[in-house]
Every structure is written in C-alpha cells, then in structure tokens.
Image (cartoon, rainbow, N blue to C red; front, side):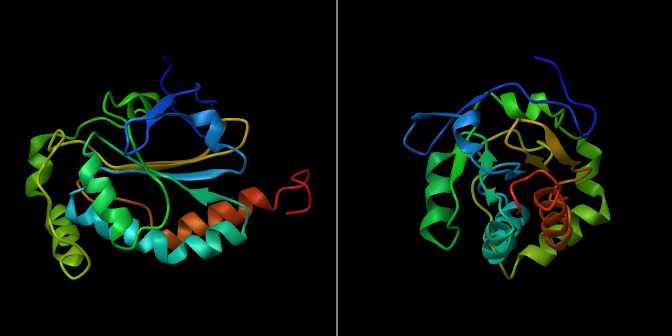
Length: 187
C-alpha cells in the first residue's frame, strides 16, 4: 500500500473493525468528511484525554459538516469503556495498523519516553483520564487525519512523541475550512 506523504493524497479503501469485530469499510464512513484521531491505544492516558477533548468539540465539528471516528489498535474492551464513559463517536479497531501505515504513522524511538513533552502530556492528562493496560506496541506514535468524502487527505498530523496531537481548535478550523470550500453544496 502506498504511504501518504502530503495533504492531497488519496487514501486507499481500508477495512477496519467495530468493537464487535464486524468489518467497517472506510468508504462507508465518508458520507461527510471525517476527523480520525489515530490513538496509540485506547488505554493510553493522553490519548483518552484527547478523545474526550474531541468529544467536547464534536457538536461544532458536526455542525461544520464533518464527523469524528477514532481508530486504535485491537483493545475492543478499552474502546467500549471509552464509549460507555463519555466518548459519543465511534471508536474503531485497526489491529494490523493498516491505516497507520497508509498515512505513515509508525512507532517512535524509545528515547522519546524521556522527552519532557511526553511527561507533560501524561501529567496534563491525569485529571481527564486513567491509564489502561498497554494492549498494543508501547511506542506506537499517535496522529490525526481528516479525510474528505473522496478519500483525499485534507489534514495529516503525525505525532512526534507519545500523546502528541494537534490542538482541537486547530482541527475545528481545518474542518470549517474544508467544508466551506466552493462546490461543497453550500456548506
């Protein structure tokens, strides 16, 4: 599968899974543009905090004409726990990391565990989330991608350390920019 290196590339159709193990094709999610946080794993404290931040902005994202769908490794019980405890958008599984590979979000070097930004992300997340059991590779980098209805990548953020995500306000600005483009049906 071709890796993406820039905004504007088209992503291949990818099969993910819901928490019940049923296949969910990426194309089936693209009735509107989607904001896809790619989490390290669903028990990761900064990842959980970021998902809750996006949940807090979900109404604004949907009002702008897009929706949010989270993607993580293979821990269905952690995804269920998040959805049962405040995250109202779908959390899907990508146990083979096909989407991560397609957008070139790989693992970070172990030395990033010593980076002060990593520790700051964890300390900042303490009031919003509990750490869950590590269920995937502990050094999986996080990221975020906004995919338009034609599978074109409109925003691609590759985390440089654990818990490194774009500012939620910047994600909303990008969604608004995308959905207000001429030729998008008046949105």
